[in-house]
Length: 85
Image (tube, rainbow, N blue to C red; front, side):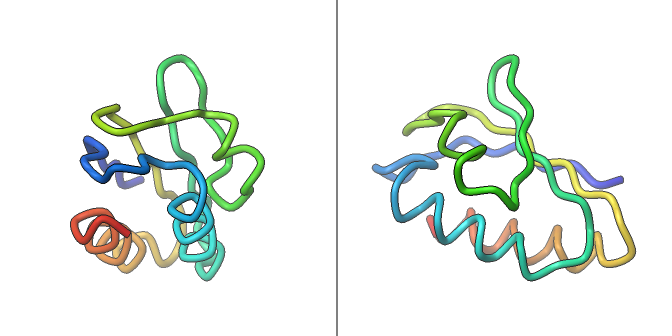
């Protein structure tokens, strides 16, 4: 299992178009991916679940990845977050 902690520095946080881009990227992989904010943990492949988190600018999220392609997923997600979606 791989874990990524990230502070959302982009203006939109993880809502709207950013949430859509994030979910689309996560959905392309076989691994199980969850994203957590506060006391909520949701499936990162579900747009409604990710929007439910309401993670905005400067919030810290945690992404957990478990599966056959977790190394690749970790690299791709880190790059996407680094480039603010």
